[in-house]
Length: 393
Image 1: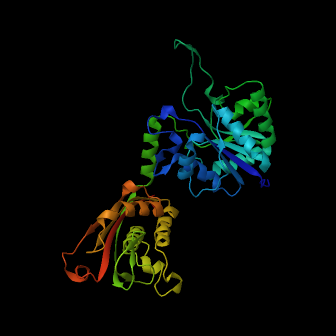
Image 2: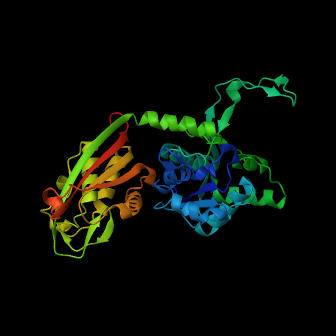
Image 3: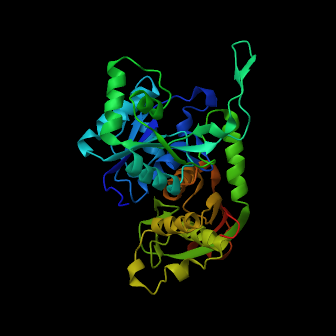
């Protein structure tokens, strides 16, 4: 089947997630080092067959949404309604100008949707016009009365657990949602139920047991443990760098331009803090050192800003399915004084690396006026990095 070039996805993220406990709306809480909504949105924005990604968010959450999904491809968020059904309709209406053929509707609270499930959803919509991912029921299900008495035991072989993304021909599901809204019907729990009410036959396709919805605090605890188990290869690397002083009026340290009576003699910007961190990360990866990736003999890196070196090292971790657990850098110098700048440096490293500031340490010490640092001839830095990788990565 030829994949339509006009496939759109709606990410429903307007709910408050009260059953997930404290910590704000669950879609903006972190799990495995990334926000729930970032994981969910990235799956669609990075999929080659999804042309348009339309988030639907609570208007009060615009700023936190933008911060949580920075760098991901998406349309301007639509404003969600009082119910999931209203929010989906808002997303569908926002997609009208894009005229998609197919739309995938996904809950932001399902952060572990895979590219394979998305591809199956697109293919299913092209074949049937309406389909949802499902997984088999493995437990015996009972129907009970309000008082808890069993009234029936449904045949398990006929039961399935519904997931998202649920996928439809765009015009068909748009009209079904519009009809339901006109008729004042607001209690549908998913889009397949609206499609069924509208007279459509809804097919199913293979879902994924990992594509679970995060609902309770226990869900977060369980999934954090699962993700941690997947990243059981814990590695630590160290780094060291030094640069001499020359003429100038500032130095670059941990991504900050720091006024000083001297400058660095260096091929790049001479940021000893970031250079040491990059070496530490590459060391943890057993992936050479900063000089092998950015040789000083290459004029391309003359005067280069060191933030790109740090981002590159982080990308090397990400490309192997890993994440950074901790970064630490120690500056060795008499001047400039690092203490007053420590938190700004931590924030800058967090910004460049995408690592939470709570996992970043910046320290400083002097050499008691001994050696080249004591004579204020230059600055040295040491660093360590702890990363987690999947076994065999």
